[in-house]
Image 1 (cartoon, rainbow, N blue to C red):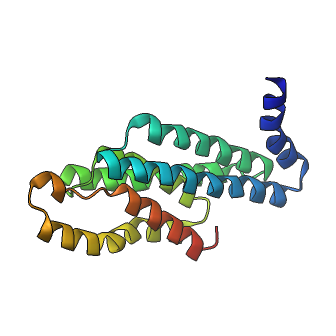
Image 2: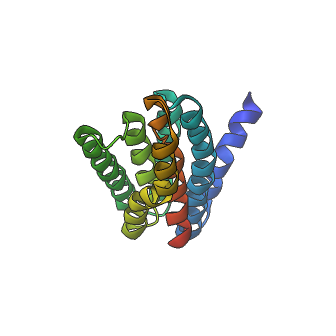
Length: 177
């Protein structure tokens, strides 16, 4: 048990002892190691059951908030956490508006958009905007063939989580996460 706790504390201790820019880079690298792993799990869940349960979305979101907070603290840039949180809230708000209007976006997708907005906020506004638009472009081929070929209405619902994750990862790679 003690060994596990010391392994968990090692990255935080290392980040605190490094120079501010190196420590922030280490913490933000952790963000972009967590997002693909969590995103793969979330995308698989969305494809399998057509929903994104709270624990599956909120657990990585809480971890991301903690990691970004550590990055902001060790880099002595507390506004970085505020900017990332604002990006997550704005992206979740935009998807919530789409869900309310009836754009076939579920509440799980809204929560996932908030998580990905928080992560993309560490890269910059351009990444957040591209990460918001990219999923729709990626989903066009599947949506066009799915709507045309599906026989029952349940098959016509497109799991949007995989496209959200792919769009965020593409935006982060374009803008240098």
